[in-house]
Length: 77
Image (cartoon, rainbow, N blue to C red):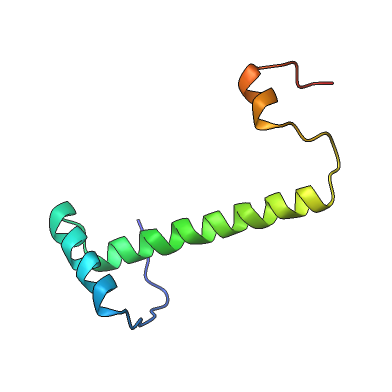
């Protein structure tokens, strides 16, 4: 459960507001809930992206390709 500590106000383009309102009606979730969840997911994705870029720029160990991972090869070596 979230505790409200800080609040922000956002101005959204009408098209986004309309989509948010429609999704809210379909899901029964408030527009605030949906916006908060979208922001949280976006921030997590940005953090993951930054970690990935940092690791690619400064690899400290072997980097496996997607093909290697999908084939389930021994990844210890």
